[in-house]
Length: 163
Ligand SMILES: [Zn+2]
Image 1 (cartoon, rainbow, N blue to C red):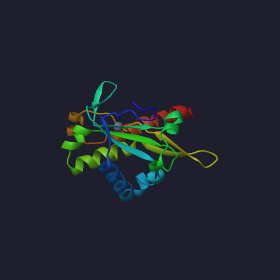
Image 2 (cartoon, helix red, strand yellow):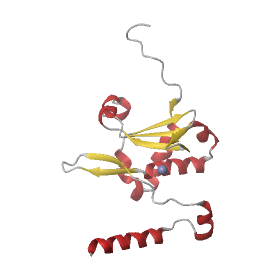
Image 3 (cartoon, helix red, strand yellow):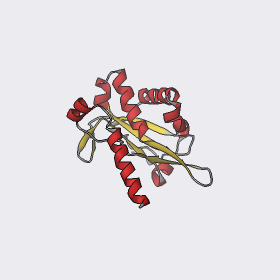
Image 4 (cartoon, protein in one colour):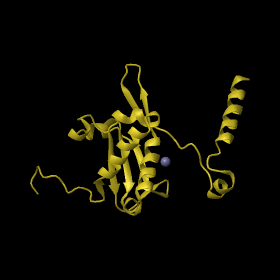
C-alpha cells in the first residue's frame, strides 16, 4: 500500500442525506422547537448491523462532537469547523420505516440537541435527556404524557428548596 493511500472506510457507515433533508424540513416546520438548531453542524449517518446503547437496541443515537473529535472531523461539509453532533440511524430500521416513522426518528434525535451560549457569545452544543420514561400499558390507560405527575414532582422539589 502506498504511504499516502487511505485505509478503506468502515463499510458499516454511510452518509444519510434522507435524514438530513427531514431534519432541515423539521427545523423549518417547528421554528420554536428547533430554530436554534439552524446553525448546528450535524453529520447524519446510517449504520449497518444495529445500534446498541447501554445494552439496548436503538433506532438511532445522537452524540455531541467536541474536543479532538471535533478537530479531526473538520472538512468542507461542516464549514471546516468540525461537526457539532453526529446522528447515527440504524440502516435496517431506516430501510423499513415509512416517511412518518422516519420523521419521528429524526424529530426524536433533534429533541436531544440544545444550543447554549457562552459569555463571549460563542455557541455550545449539549444533549438533553428524555422528558419521560413509561410503559405502553400505562400510556394505553392514562394517556400519553404523564406531564401533570412530573409537574407535581417539580413543584414539590421547588417547595422543599424554598424551605
Ligand atoms: Zn432518545
